[in-house]
Amino acid sequence: MQHQNNLKKVNVLGDANVDMILNLSDKKNLGEPALFSGGSSANVASGLSKLGIDVSFFGSLGNDMYGKHVVDEMKADGIDVSNLELLDNYSTAMVIGVVEDNSERHFFLWPPEKGAHNQYTLSVKSTEDLLNCDWLHVSGISLRFSPVKETMLEAMRLCINSNKTVSFDLNLRSELWGLNESFKETVLQAVSLSSIVFGNLHEEFYPLFDADEDSLHSHISKNQIFICRNGEKGALGVTTKDKVESEALSISPVDSVGAGDAFNSGFIYASCIGKGMKESLDTGNKVAAYKLLGSGARHLPTEELLEEFNTKYSKY
Image (tube, rainbow, N blue to C red; front, side, top):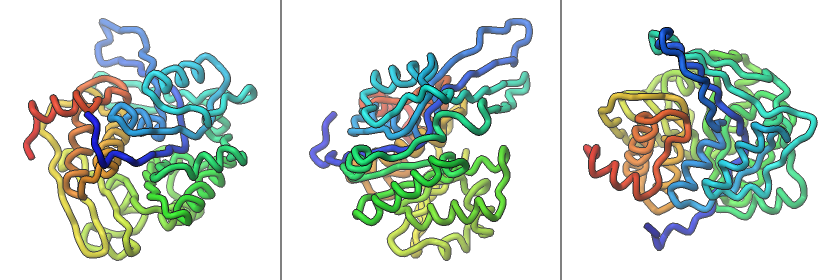
């Protein structure tokens, strides 16, 4: 379905990798490891492109079998990869997920620091291409290591100063790497360069700002929005003056990997076609619910599939 007001171009900068899932939930019937394309930023790019948004991806991968696999899947999803680099001297990162018999998940990253996704820098051409958009989306996973940290902050600065919408998913991963004061300062710098900040209400917004729901609005700048994902309770959008809530759909999840990224892509998509805060939150919840019903972070709907899903599950 085409929308007359669907005129916005979205650039996504950040991480792309592969996810290797080892399911140990049934030890008597162990299957082969499952390989999926992943990466928080790349997942959002895929979700947006499937929903009909014009998307370009900026980042780097290893020039290896996994990197080529990710590029092929991006192309298949309709993402412009002309600013995606394949690096000879670095490996594509792999996130290894182990699912226990109680459905508890454990995640491990390899290589832990010097993956290809951390090496991205902007050239003169990619900087020019970066500014050819209406919206830039980035993820906090790119703030941990250089040089991609500096690249991401510079990209945000360039776009916000050029009156582009800049959305930033906190993606703190503090359970893996902690949340020390130095990193908090970097994250807050990124927040200051953002129009919209996504994150988990309890695991990210509260500890980052040392706040609760009643005081969170005091940390928001004028014309800025905090989009707080709240698990089974849904999500809320907070501005300096207002708070808008949206309930999650009642479903039985199959796989939670990438649900936050799916929500982000749904919210951005709805905003790009002219929807307001409430409808954008609702759409984010619906896309996240669709993803939860399938395996892998890329179990994401097209516009047509989302409409069918709305008909079957919608409660709004």
